Length: 370
Ligand SMILES: Cc1cc2nc3c(=O)[nH]c(=O)nc-3n(C[C@H](O)[C@H](O)[C@H](O)COP(=O)(O)OP(=O)(O)OC[C@H]3O[C@@H](n4cnc5c(N)ncnc54)[C@H](O)[C@@H]3O)c2cc1C
Image (cartoon, rainbow, N blue to C red):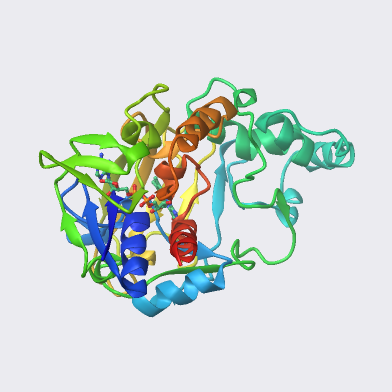
């Protein structure tokens, strides 16, 4: 049997364990620092209400990733969901991505139309702020993007963000249907415990070590010290920040974390049925509010749980979309030999890695090993 070590038991770690098991011939050890599998996608409970840390719904244009997950973790489509943003200066909720029809409802629509007509689309943008102003004009940028992004990334000014070809929802201004995911599949597990049964199934044939950390990493030699013993592997799949597993040789990679506020309200449901969560791009300290009953459809209760996400230094959750930090991550990746893979959101050091990308990365590893 060939030996594989997986570091981190979130989506990326569990899906890789599963795909190696489906391939056969692998002896897999998975090391997870926490007391459970699933990382941020684990179902937790508050006042009897199931929730995850943030929405964690499954959005994808990758039909193979959808088919795989649906097979092992039956999914319910939630295509009716409309993303809404509260624009405080207009005292109005609008669709996100910015929708052309909403502009007609705005008090400053004439100014917005002038800015849209004057967009210098032929000049390449230099930074995130410049990208958005050139895409939608200053007024829409200030309403939807400016403060959201500075609080999200904890920067003084969005000109500090110098990568911008990852526009949050792939479009800047939208026409047509308001359902944000009419171009992708949007879904969440049918099971009452969300993705949890999948994490158990995915790792059923692996040696899972919970509450465990590697004592010492030697990834260039595909070895680690685990419970005091030096062990070598044929492959290592890392899903945690690359600086950690490379002994911070080039310094620490910055991340943004989240504080998470849970609020139970004495009503069965508080948001309209097609609104699962809301964005807040103003001076509020939070970026998003999720109503968890919208995802956990089978959950019945006379009360409802809301989760508020507040950007903070709590956790290494969001890799910064800033070039010098990505370059630093790339230095770490360059030192990893064949047979060492670094995947998942933190492991790739890419904000744009979502659940479907974790699956795609696991599929790619297994394909490369064939
Ligand atoms: C608040 C929030 C909301 C999100 N919502 C969505 C969404 O709605 N849809 C979507 O597609 N994506 C969403 N994402 C992104 C998506 O959830 C992630 O891309 C995906 O779940 C990441 O899986 P992962 O395995 O890379 O990381 P994680 O889920 O973070 O798992 C990493 C695991 O590694 C473990 N670990 C950490 N350090 C060590 C160590 N030293 N040794 C061993 N183990 C360690 C952790 O305990 C954790 O279990 C969200 C992300 C955040 C932060």
